[in-house]
Image (cartoon, rainbow over all chains, first blue to last red; front, side):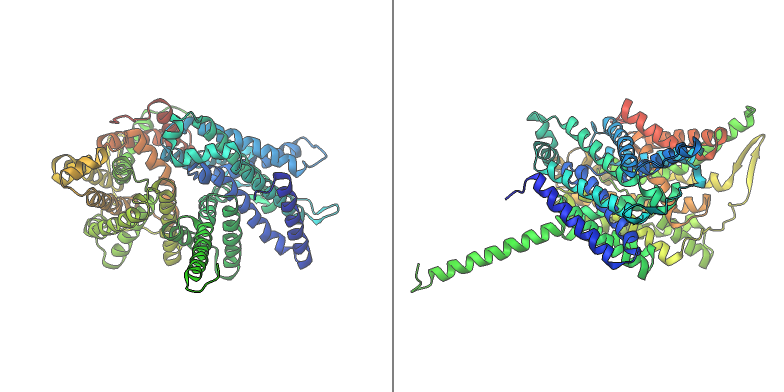
Length: 340
Length: 291
């Protein structure tokens, strides 16, 4: 049974409303600070999975796309500050701008490298992060290597503290990302992506426009990562190139879908929520360095032992149970004196 | 800025010297990525591991870092052979090397790096050796020995590798594995064994490259990240699997980086290798000396 997209969206929004309501119930803003990071990883890993999981192209440059979104926000913030414009930009507009910028860069990257073997794309994304960081470090307008301060408003009408507003925005973006991923999965586009993942040469031979499909995937994936980065300066307050371009974003956004399972939208969601929560707990209780060790070990362990992630494990478990069940019934039916 | 001739000459010389070091760093990747088709993105992390081994031995026994590195190459070889075995059984055999194999090495990168951070902390470490201080002067040209020694040893290393690859049976088998595995099997050679040996050699070079790195500059665990993009850029620019190509490309990148940081400022230097990479991919994907 496949739920239609509008119905699915309504279900997602309902779940989102429950999540927001429960977070409000706790009555402590720390929940919003921690939850924001987890939701951000839901968006990043879902976005990564559109290219990585569906098409089979590994993007190591998550941080680059994320940082593009963040720095376009900083650029707009400075622009408004310099020209004494009275209003601060509404967050959805900033997200849109970040998404457009990252989407364009994603398209350009893909155009240059996707005609070659897959590994070249991965290496080029890695190098992209270095170059964008070099550009930002040398661009004084957005703070250069000193970093940039972004002062966030104290309160938002109707919602309360600003971090709640950011949390809500990220929640909506996460829902949008999941809905897009699911829509792709069940559409012609998704089947095209799957043919690329399984056998690109055969797909090309059968007339699948592989380059065009791959470009669509990189653009959507990059745009979503940029949108996830756009609110970040307001969340963190002080944006600095070294931490914004950190490889940590890349390893997380690769580990989360692979741990959850890459073939469906559920995988990155499960992976991000599990790993994101685990990291929040580990950061508070142990240290943030151990965080990355946990992610690295889980990533290596999962790709070796459970290549299809948690979803794969659940599938095999259910299948085995079904087989056991069917097998037992057949044995019962064959038993002498059994009533058919 | 006033254009000065000494500055130019010195920039080029130091570019060549650093290029020699880049060549050592790239040789391992060239072997793994260029010949075996294994995208070992964790190679720089193993280089840092090599740096720390050199540091520990140097700090406790006062042994020369390069000598240490040569002595421990069998350990690195064994590490590489072990990693290849895991990689083969888990990914190559199942045909999943493109996505999960890449993720595997990315995970290894973080495990190695964070383990070093947890054990040694993030302080910069350095070694001491008689050739680290002094500098030779030839007219206006400065030749710091701390750069010259790694460069020379690195070129020796690559010459040795090239000799092994072209003159010995194992080396020719390694080159053959890149071309046709089935043919190799028909000659009664186990391609998996050959690949294991080749990957072992690739990681063994990381031990030496690590020693060079810690001679050239103080090292902390995450320094390796700066080399990932650079190394692959050099490897692609030189032509996959070509050792002479890798040396030329490494020198080229070294010189242009050095000129950039002398005349435009060091903060622009990291972009150089990426520029080279994009240009190569767009204009001549086979590289300078590609097959």
